[in-house]
Image (spheres, rainbow, N blue to C red):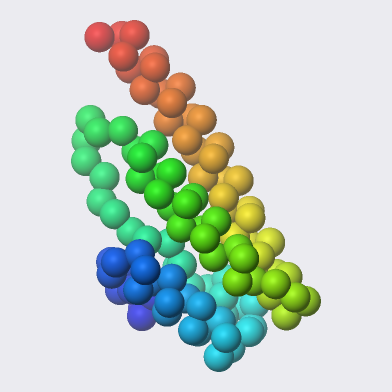
Amino acid sequence: MLFDALGEIPVESLRKHVLLITRLNKDPKLFSSINIEPQSGGALGISLVPELERRIEFLESLLPHFTGIDYLQHKLKIEQRIRTLKQRIKQELVNETIYNLSL
């Protein structure tokens, strides 16, 4: 619940909290259970791509902090999420193109 609420705070504060909790508790299961992405509401008719790109940028900013064997699973989770978001961007761009062509 805490990290769901933290997703609403400014990105720099969220980064600090994510890094603090992972320094205090390196358990990859705990890390997998928390939502570490900044949250933002989308609006109908507005491209999701910029928001998805901001999430990728945030996650990429975390990667340099997850070094060493203790953080291997953390880093893999972040890298997987980045790949998923990049795929979602591709799909959004296709959807937007199709939508624009149908207008």
